[in-house]
Image (cartoon, rainbow, N blue to C red; front, side, top):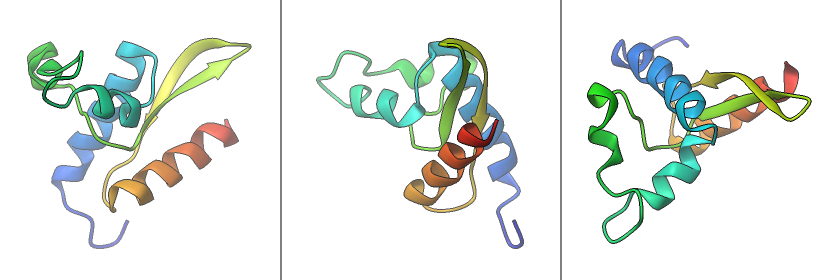
Length: 90
């Protein structure tokens, strides 16, 4: 995306990694990674690769996770929307 931060490249890769590592959207992981929630502190695992904000979606084929997509560069809801569209197109 024109004007996107260079740091967004690594973030998008790690969003895809996170979605595949846990087979769930990073947005859902974020909701459970807040203080007092069951996954609080998970962002520090896996050598800091875990991204706990919207934009990572697992890709499924016949109900089996076969990969993931990660999007970064916009606001969280924008990243989420683009990732959902990308996953649906596969």
